[in-house]
Length: 444
Image (cartoon, rainbow, N blue to C red; front, side, top):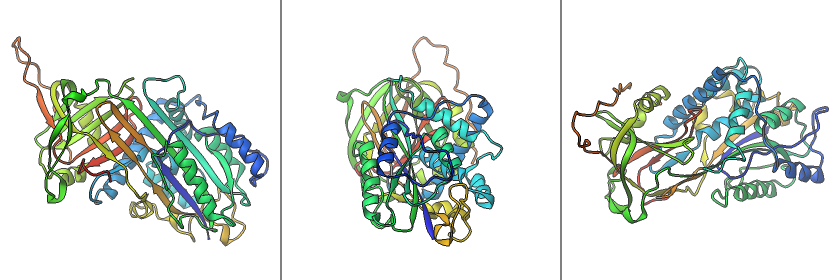
């Protein structure tokens, strides 16, 4: 059986694009042509699509966030620090879904919350074009998509055209059948080069073999400076209560007092820290209970997160959050989680239907998803954030200021125990990264 690898990574560089022949189904044309296509891919990305409605753009954001929360809840049982770019995973699977047919396509659409009435790929192209805006200098965000195909494998022209035009995905030919290890090294090398070596050895040994026919890659790199940076001189060691009953640790903790978007309930505090440019923000979800993070994760939903964010209002807040870095040694393998969420057919070598990508000439070339690998790097310090790679709680409006001349005392947001964070595109509403800090003294 031939496998279809979906690799979601966090990376640097603009979206890739190449001009593949639009004749009959394409057989990769050789090293020279692929070198030329790769060079073109460095220069161009998806162009905005006219006619995409606001409702279609909103539907894409809603789908991405609903999938984000459901995937997180599936992964949340893992101990320790954790970070994922569900936005990256959703885009990689959207490309894959474009080549699915029949029940496989219907099941993927249901679990990814995609509206199968059209417009999704155009909305994705517009989002990618804005994220990759070359004129922007307030923060750095680059999203790259790339296909790595076996040179001797025929890929449908319509699939190549759609992934190129809507996702900026160029295609590079590799010899999976005759040089699987060298192909794996090539993909890993491309990943490392795009991420300033933040993502290394994404594809572990034996993840590529002679049965691999196509690997789809989505890569995201984000570097944002806080709108109001923390003063380095104000950082000092403070106690952090780790999860799982582990002994407390002292970790470098950043401090700042000022006006912030803030909301609270009896069980939760919510704080938003915007980045320069105001397009993106980090939203921190801090349970009141020291060991309340697991319960909070069990309550997550896309609608609940939207309500918490909608309740934010400006308040004077005394903020204390630890510096942290999440840099896992091994990638996440997501196939099991995705199957458990109900996306079973895509991973079934006998039932998967990806004939929109390639028409199988025999059972050995029938495509299915063998695995989804994902790795995320997130670093938060005084300057900002570098990131490479859903119980209803009613929150009332912010109370009116008391009729006194002196300002009210600031709220205290002290993240001295496990908490969750979201990195959100404020304009579209898409959650690009989700993470949990259980122990700031650990990197994975």
